Image 1 (tube, one colour):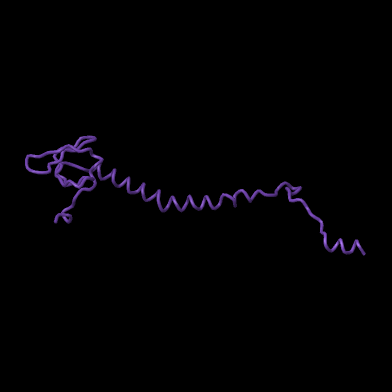
Image 2: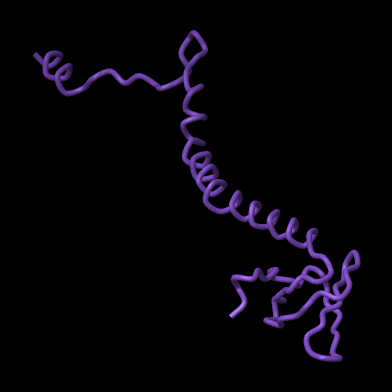
Amino acid sequence: MFDFISSLLVSEAWAMGASPEGGGGGGSVLTGFMPLIIIFVIFYFLLIRPQQKKSKEHRDMLAGVKKGDKVVTSGGIYGLVEDVSEKTVMLKIADNTKVKFGKAYIAAVRTPSDES
């Protein structure tokens, strides 16, 4: 009688370990890193890739700056390009007033539709 009651209340406990075939737990590493991988992919497409694209467009715009272009600096100064070198640009901002700027500080090249 006691054996019957003890068998109902107590069950056998098996230790969780690797299976004898050696395949236990291999997929759990991948599933453990899956949320991190998904977060990285989301960050890449929402933050990193658009920033790289914008940076490339700005580099291409700076490479195309030439004498006679109307530009705006990052400080908000409007000017006409008088001379272009590798790293600097000479801007005419008023009659008889020329200022030398770093080429990287040109924010945009103005188009005729921007004139207003």
